Length: 83
Image 1 (tube, one colour):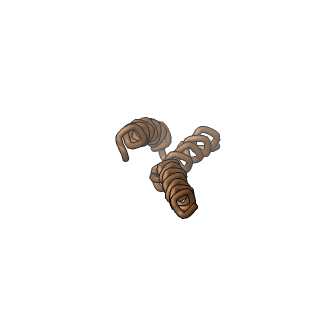
Image 2 (image 1 turned 45 degrees about the vertical axis):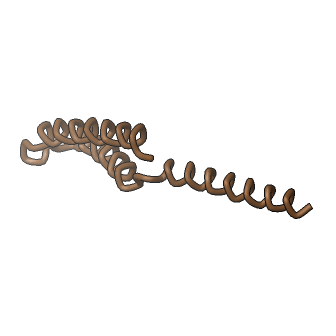
């Protein structure tokens, strides 16, 4: 009986550890995910703005889109290579 109980306890612990690891992996890069969200919102704001911020809007939009692309690539790489 004690061997069965030991097996159940060890199996439960292993499963719990695996589930916790998967949860951590999903939220492993919250700063990147927040940055992506903020850039998306900034792009929307700049696109809808009634003025061009002294001629800087177009370049800012370009740079935000490039930064967004780079962050998405970085996050994709991290998700595929973090362990």
